[in-house]
Image (cartoon, rainbow, N blue to C red; front, side, top):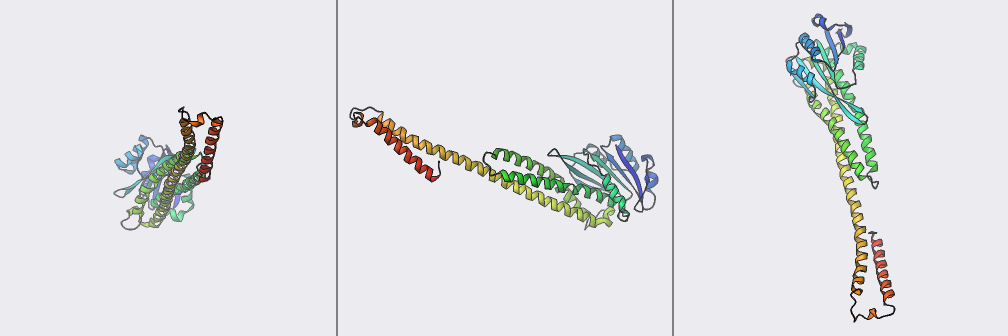
Length: 321
């Protein structure tokens, strides 16, 4: 679906452009066309491919989606794939933004996401001095908008992790904690897959051999890289903390099981002593004098009870009961 198609000249909005008249604006001086689509249909992409002479492989990637974040060069054309991450009902939903950039046009194709970029267009139009730098600044603005939306997700994941950490030492919550930690680890991995490849790709947009279209906007892409680096560092810290929390949680489970085993062992020892004496006195030999003694039965019970009480006291004192 076509969201909008607008021509800009010298940093200012020139007019909305019908798709079949795009070529009339491509050759105007200091002019470029910005086309935005959402969940584009094959026919729409074929029309734009014919208008802008887009590479077949890049169009195929934009049509089918599910690509790894990347930035590829096709001559003077840059093709970028950026993952759009949304937090929906406590789960991460992954969309995709495919961007075609050349000196006189930008084509953005948004797939599988409800997060629009009308605010990015409005921001660019409010800054004509920056928009005057052409399609490369639009490319930066789109990437920057996507990357900035990663920060609230990082904060949400950190808050969730802190909540789980507060419950680690609560008895009886270990199983639920481990489940939540693994769910959190899966979310962090999803975000890692969006950030890490994009950080590597964006490093090629400033310093050294920079694509021609980005030559005058290198400092902006360095800012994007810095943001991605911060996010990637936060992700690594969260992953390390999750690993530590899982180990601590498993240690708590082991300690709790050890406490239970100690109690069972203590009670088993107490009853084993009582069972041993009862077994001896239950053999009914004729020469056992206590069998003929008037107070033999209560004395035996008193002795067993006293011994069990002594053992209970010793186990209690040592912390086993």
